[in-house]
Length: 86
Length: 231
Ligand SMILES: Cc1cc2nc3c(=O)[nH]c(=O)nc-3n(C[C@H](O)[C@H](O)[C@H](O)COP(=O)(O)OP(=O)(O)OC[C@H]3O[C@@H](n4cnc5c(N)ncnc54)[C@H](O)[C@@H]3O)c2cc1C
Ligand SMILES: [Zn+2]
Image (cartoon, rainbow over the protein chains, first blue to last red):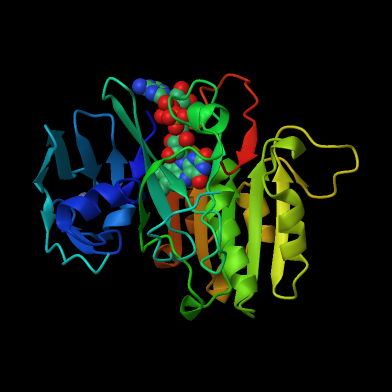
């Protein structure tokens, strides 16, 4: 499957974070680059949804939904901003 | 065309998530850009039918006027254009990637904006050009320039670009990097990546390039994908 970007999971992020996330910034712990969430490289066909740094490939975000509950892991994301109003 | 009872309005470029639920409870969800402008009275989606797709053939062939759909949205603040963002604006579309740009151009017209905008739209052949007449009409406005490129087949008298939107064509047809344009690129992932790479190569500022990837659109088989406006 071809990779997507953070726009494709904007709805899911909105549900999880309670607000609009595509323009929220976060930094990659690997290469220190700052991204807006819309810019991440996103794979929705991995088990769960995976967001990677577009420069260095580090996994920044993993979303796994089971029985209607979504768990969020942010293994490589630092300085994540707050969601804005939806 | 959708009649959404609780719609609170959207921004040009936003999308919705459409969810289908089968009788056995199986669910599939896909995103679709909003083709209408914030000023339009109804919400319009435009779905390109992928022959081997799971959701798009249902939306195009099976869904009937009057049927209900489960929607979430409007969604997204990143791939949005508002007049305060200014320009000059370059909108670069591959295939159904033109959908959010139709919203932006209708919005631009509805507010009578003078921000210079250029749409470069790549389709495989003339019958696959979505919104053609309307785009030509919108392109007749003073500030707006619409250019359709046909990548695989074209009529003999076609006087638009023939071939892909590549680096050379971007150099000639997109605004020069030195004019600091705000660039939006949308379409199949491979198209978006190729165009974004070429723009950076031409000296465009990465912070002024916004991208939205629709994923794979087609299995690579020469299956013509019919596009149909709305539902
Ligand atoms: C933000 C956003 C906005 C969008 N806006 C629009 C829009 O306005 N209009 C529009 O038409 N589309 C839009 N899309 C694309 C849309 O969401 C769907 O992806 C598209 O309609 C295809 O869905 P489908 O279920 O028909 O196909 P799918 O079943 O998802 O298949 C898509 C393609 O991928 C291939 N594929 C599927 N599974 C695999 C696999 N495991 N391995 C390899 N290849 C595979 C299929 O062969 C097919 O060619 C948008 C996408 C995003 C992210
Ligand atoms: Zn990185």
